[in-house]
Length: 173
Image (cartoon, rainbow, N blue to C red; front, top):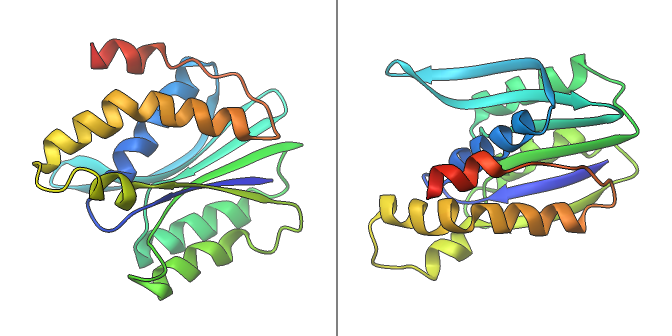
């Protein structure tokens, strides 16, 4: 089992990046098996979902608040066991900012003995762009570089999966 932590403070683009990854999985033929979301003001905000293709399972959790931890934990526990290749992609708050939220998310998967963690630090990306509008930051960092970030993470995974991010590239153009 491998873990991709999308770390960031509130409103740094964790959910946006999770949705980009979800689009790539769907475009690559992964099928959605479970999905729960938290709608706000009529549109989906944070979500937890499980996608499968062949012998690979990808669990995506974009919520890093207490309510999201409960949903993530329930979905994770209710769908055991997982395939040979299982990747968890989850939003997480920085430990220095909120140790409780950070630790709650980690407790969901820490029982697994074989795991490797990969970190995408959106706070670090944000600090490189201090002074710009958040919407410009999301476009610049996530939409322009999200595909590159995703490919780098996928190349580091021991569990190799083929993904197609053509739809993401087309949306950016």
